[in-house]
Length: 161
Image (cartoon, rainbow, N blue to C red; front, side, top):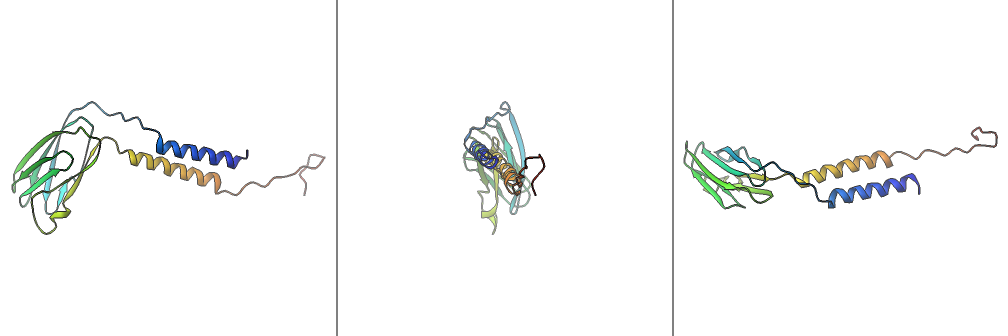
């Protein structure tokens, strides 16, 4: 087999492994986590919350301007905060994945765009995409370079012209 065929085979095998092999999903021991989320027209801050599976999550919603709500789609957790007030909701993050949370109180013209993201566990698609991108770069280095010309040697041990 030539170097290029072996290289293609290895890149294909590594690519399939990056996509199909289950990743070890280690996470920290479950613990209680509290997040302060400020709601103002028309955004949450922070708009992304990362937790580990099994964590007991408390979200303290603070409304800065009008009445806002926060509803976590996957968990059915809901809370409403009046202007200048804080309200809290607690739930156990027992499902892995990425889930939306959104304002569930009509708060103005751009209310439908007031969303955020709850990530439970590691972002597996991101890890796989990074692995595939690294394989693509390796493939460029291995195969984009032109092949080295072969030299023949005459009977005296010197390269032929």
